Length: 127
Image (cartoon, rainbow, N blue to C red; front, side):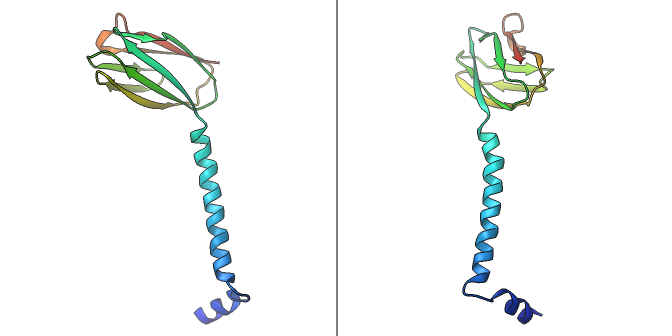
C-alpha cells in the first residue's frame, strides 16, 4: 500500500516536497489573511486622569473590530466597565490594558469606572 502511494506521488524529482511546500504555502496564506484582519483593527486610546475618562466620548467605525487601550495615569486602580459592551476590567494605577471590541452595531455604548462612578463616565459611539 505504501509502495503504491510513493510510486504514484514520486513521478518527478522532489514531487512530494513540492506538494508539502505547496500545502504549507496555502496554510501560511490562510493564517496571514486571518491575522491580517486582526492586525487591521484600529487602535483607540482612553486615558484615566483624575478619575475621569479622556475623551469622555469616543467615536469608532461600526461593523469593525477595534482595539481599545485604556491607560490609567492615576496612582489608584480604576475599573473599565460597560454592560452594553459586556466588558469589565480593572486597570491598576499607572498601567494600561488593551481590550478587543466589536464589531459593533451602530449605536451608543456607555462605560464607567466602578471605583469612581460619579466622575469616571463615558461612551463609545459606533457610526
